[in-house]
Length: 373
Ligand SMILES: NC(=O)c1ccc[n+]([C@@H]2O[C@H](COP(=O)([O-])OP(=O)(O)OC[C@H]3O[C@@H](n4cnc5c(N)ncnc54)[C@H](O)[C@@H]3O)[C@@H](O)[C@H]2O)c1
Ligand SMILES: [Zn+2]
Image 1: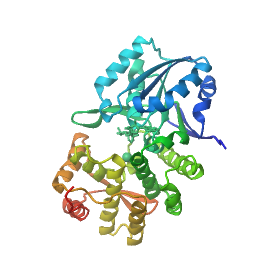
Image 2: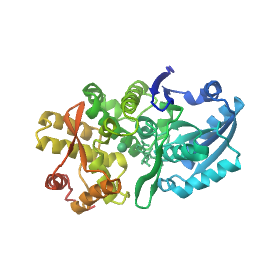
Image 3: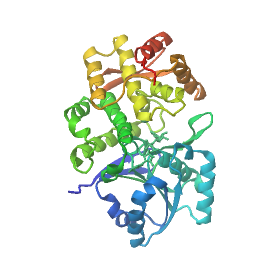
Image 4: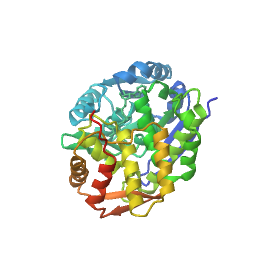
């Protein structure tokens, strides 16, 4: 079965970014793009891992439909997300004589999406961008919403632009090759949508735990499709109301204030983003519990779900002040006040300022593992 579903993201900036969800979309890419694009020139930007797995099929299909395809293959690493790589890519685009009406396809996880998206935003003041996200995290989060960018030595994602793709193709078939820890990364964002937007969605996760934990995207297509489609829709709805993160979009940061602090305190070496966000969500929920904003029953529901999904909910041994410093550092760089997105019940959150350091430290201590790793 290959049902195709389209989500239309209508934005104030005149671009209507379509998100298309289905299986085997990649086999029909050329035929689909023929109807969408005015130019035949496409540059596929990907990394070595994804190139080996999926690029040949895509390129053959596009060439069959008379597209001229050039490919840029990058190193498989967050380290590729830097301004020097942006310049290298632009040099290649100029050598390929890519013009304004031509198209960049970002094929890969969030790293490729952010980097290729940023290049598309600034090359000739913006050329067509299509996302084909290949990680669960990229399908449910980073490929939707138009945030693009690269890292700076002083912090992650400090250079960037809001730039919407004209199309995003979510093909659940490509997820079958993901490593388990990468699936877990996407699952953290999926749980997040349940807490910030929909009790029904969280209940669906609870009811399908055993299926989800098989990580079998081909066999359990219906469940994964539902989860991904809904997640994409939640994000699209939030983006449509607040494209440039003035207010509502902030709720997407649930679990991320502390999560980012943990990732940074461990120099981005120890924690994958989703794993740190899972701890961050639980701690934010615990802070809300202490402030009597959130019930113990809802807190237990979240904790049980994260545990059932196999997240490690203890922070590895560290000086907890280091995490707190990173939480503040991140905000200082971005000239923002420390704001916490806290749950009030499953499916609903509020943003709070003025959370006391003592309360944050208290919770960091509570979730600090005493084991030496
Ligand atoms: N723009 C946004 O709104 C936004 C939101 C969240 C995260 N991000 C960014 O996204 C990045 C993280 O993205 P990610 O988690 O996708 O990581 P990633 O892009 O590094 O991909 C994770 C790993 O999976 C591999 N991979 C990708 N697709 C595969 C497949 N189908 N089969 C097998 N292996 C595959 C990659 O090669 C990589 O090794 C970070 O840089 C983060 O800042 C951006
Ligand atoms: Zn995230």
